[in-house]
Image 1 (cartoon, one colour):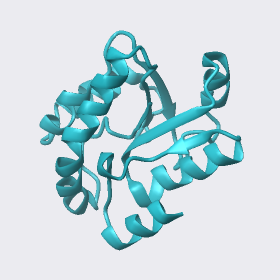
Image 2 (spheres, helix red, strand yellow; image 1 turned 90 degrees about the horizontal axis):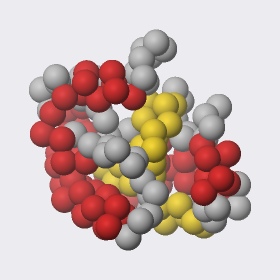
Image 3 (cartoon, helix red, strand yellow; image 1 turned 90 degrees about the vertical axis):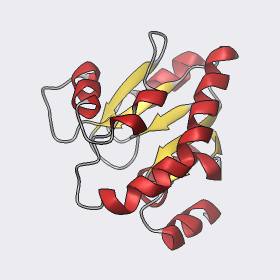
Length: 156
């Protein structure tokens, strides 16, 4: 299970458009994460570093919990067994160690959840497909900015 960009302070220009969709997806995201943990499925957080090149995942989490939408982050925080990959671009694979990590885990199937459906989730799903991984994107566990583009992305 790969949780994309959910550790977020929601202080970016299109946050107002995104937050309602995050609120709607949060219950299913929480259930997916809880189920994966219960069943011993690795949970990997792939998260933007927001241009903070000196930051590590602990600092990213601290910053988001200090933000105005911490209630969107708290229910899905990484636990001690979670893995964390910092990314800088749209795809969770682009210049990250994720491909290697997945090969070490013996993964041939990834479940992608998080945000933004029509951006990072789409690009990551396409990159996973190129890497010959089976890909599942639960439509009720992803959040979007633009509903029409998200619907198109899910069809792709």
